[in-house]
Image 1 (cartoon, one colour):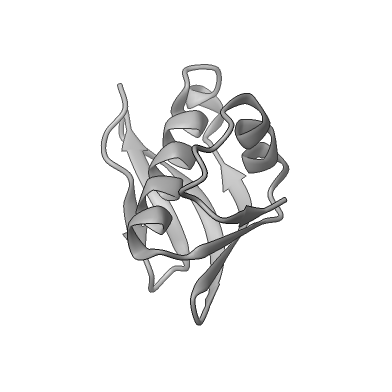
Image 2: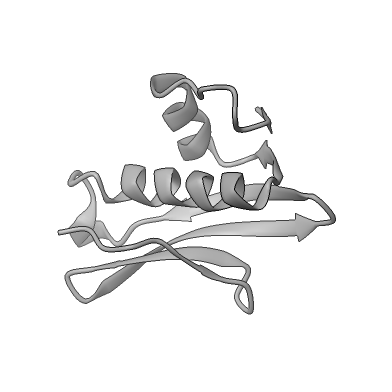
Length: 93
C-alpha cells in the first residue's frame, strides 16, 4: 500500500502517496538542520502504517543530507521512542 517518500521543498514537506491520497510531514529548513513540525495522514489511511512509513522515509532522507533533526511533531516523537535511532541521526526531541 505504501510508496516512496518524496521531499517537496516548495511546499516544505515530505510526502507519501498511497491509494490516491497523500500523507505529509511538514518541516522548516535552516542551514544544516530540519525541524519536523506536523504529520498529517488522511482519515482513510490511518491505522495502516502509512504515518510510520512517512516518518521513516523522512528521517532517511534527512540522514542522507546530514541534517540535524529537531522534532516538534508528537507523532514523530512517538515514532522515535518506538524505534530508537542507530546514532546516525542527530535529533533533538
